[in-house]
Length: 352
Image 1 (cartoon, rainbow, N blue to C red):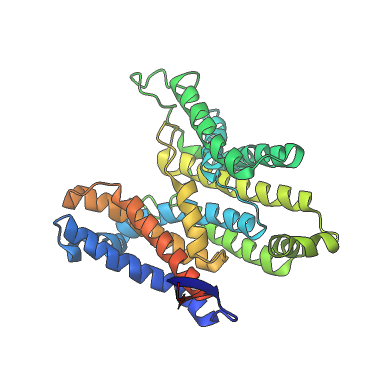
Image 2 (cartoon, one colour; image 1 turned 90 degrees about the vertical axis):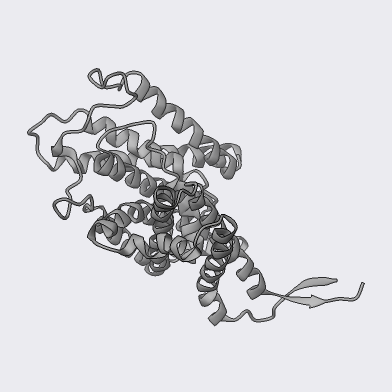
């Protein structure tokens, strides 16, 4: 029978090439999937890997999807490196949108355009507040942060639904479950006329730089890394596990809330029950494919955004289900896990 044995020295080159191998495996399985569905595999791959990059409009839409993925994945990478498993970034994203939308609804026409900063700051606070619930329950009652953060996603969805179906419902919205449309003064500025690309992409770029400096050049970032890699050594050095927990969760929640605020006062322009886009769950894959490194996360987020757009194009042009997006995301994650398994372990035949 076959048996997996740990390698004495995993190859650094293969570890760097693992995401590329995982992508190649995903493409190969995708070809077989298109053939099984009776579709031209070349046309299918074109929808996922070429069409999202063709033209200024396509790149604009790509940036809108990549921005929240980058922001959320950065926060998740900090948590995962510290061995803290925040699986509820989707809920923090929703609460960021709710808090930012609540501020945006109070802004009157003709107000200062700088109030968009207040709306985004409210989004950050909303995400931090939702993440703080998870940190508090783990810190005080030793609750499992995986279960708590995941269950709070559904609570956040209920809060959003209550608001848009109830007190925040637009009285002139023909009974649709939506808030009023936010005034232009509180909308995120666009970069080009006629396109939806906005300054959120610059905010994401600054966040990548700050996160890279935080993890590699600050004492607090070093504490988080040591706590995640060697908890016993961290305790021996006097590093506070409670401080690491709160720091990682608040940072992750704040970035997810910022992403939600950018989405609410950016392309959405109002609150609806469809604010949850699955970015919080997709960002988990983005973080791991990007090797929990800020620069790797950027490339991984672009790839994941191509999957989102490719799924929409495959649905409208090829008649395939939109769920194909999730299939490609899952294939990429499982392929990466398989590659990592064989990088760190070798397959050996052992006689029964």
